[in-house]
Image (cartoon, rainbow, N blue to C red; front, top):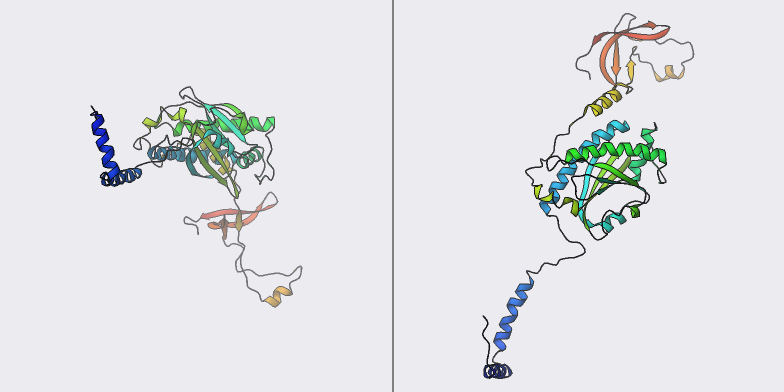
Length: 331
């Protein structure tokens, strides 16, 4: 309990202070105050860090696994090679995430019974219209002007997103079992108010590239959704470089695309050497003598590589070649 000073003791202290006797005490009192300032940590109430660095790293690992699985899924569905990379995992407010979205865009609200809150997955317009073009049989060229999806296009993209959501469930299996489903799709960011604007969210940006076309998927995971999952997200539970599981549908789709992929086949009839003068004087009807005979086996190149030897002939009034020998180590 603090000691209470009497009036005479208070008067004595005031007298000593006026005479300068307490000057040393005042100077000595400043040093710990200045030292204590070094331990002050600035806390921004607008951007509270509610997720630790270790948990952020674990979230990155989970979504790297998600991105790798989407690579194989999108490559099979869009019939083109797609690469992916997790570009950023940040803590922001929901209003900041909404402001970062393209307008218009493809914004999906996704939820699960096991989660306390819905979350948002935005598919960048570049990736959206690449998918629309490829799924409708196009070549997947660049789109100069973005617009809202038509009803038919939205229905096709909805099916694509439902497939992507299944891989989200698989990526989270080391932490918890969830069964997510697509609840709604919007084209305007302002319509997706799933939580208050000032709430903390984890924003995850995944970049995708297909040839020269680069797009992306942005995920917004509210802290309310992650609150019960964060204690389970120890680094030991989530393995780095998780193995991608190939489902039967994806395997058959890739196999079908490989079987229908055109491969150039060339048969070399022979070679000869002529001078530049002879080349300039060539006319219709001239004959070039090659270094092969009619019964020689001709080299067959598949995809630019030496794969077999064959003999020339005809089949149903068309030129053909019969394979007589395979080359084991093509070069």
